[in-house]
Length: 359
Image (cartoon, one colour):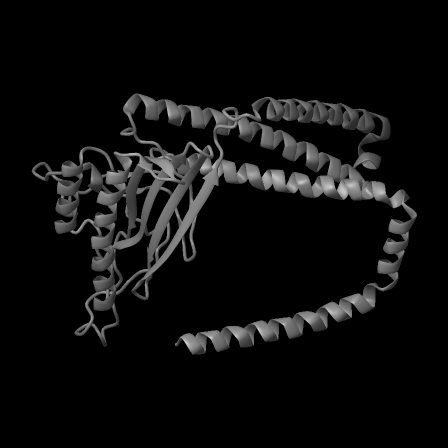
């Protein structure tokens, strides 16, 4: 890695170890204020390594002896090492931080970042133990260059819970080491309500869920009857049939994901209670399923809105509006094209003006 990139990596490495200690300190105490009261449930740091560096051109090899390789899941290092990234043998001392853990062990999933997609596994530094133990281990890892020039991504994950609003904050910080040197930071914070039945609106929510399930069962029976009456060819040729089937399919999928998310949440909270927050708990996995559930609910609302608009075709004013839009379709498209061109030109000019001003 070029010298500038190594310098950036060393600076970020020191910041990470400092952040680890502070996260762990917050984890051992409830942070309470006039408007804030939360508990950090679990935190960890893990990163991805490249298996090897590339060889520079023979022309510049006397000046630069190494070059960076772009990260990919094929070039990811999945080997186990001893302390200081030494190759394992009978005499090598090893720590868990130098042992590769796969995505299945970490309850991980592929993470789509800005520059790459990461597999979900890696080398993990778990934030558990006393403050003194954390400080000593952080110093040992820093001296042994646990984060080095082969590092391509560094994740910091932790979850906070605010009992006042009954929300979990699933937080992921990511620093990507670019092949052109330097680091690209990003973060993802997901506020999630995982304890749905611990609020004053529990009975109302439960009633709405039961009504929703009854409606879905009714629509399934209705569509099965229509399929038998009309046959396969006439049944699937209608557009609104596809809308009905998508609503049923998304509803069943959302229901399955909802109960699976509930089971995983109960498992994690039970583990937290048994280990007092020192067991391995990855709430990002639950957050992933919650995000998928929200996407399905969004599609359901969209399809239900389209189906509701179909009922307005009997209204004379809505029919008149539809005929007007159909008649003016070509002029509206031309106007939309011109508007898009001028709007994008204005946005680009504004962006260039701001960037030049900042530079």
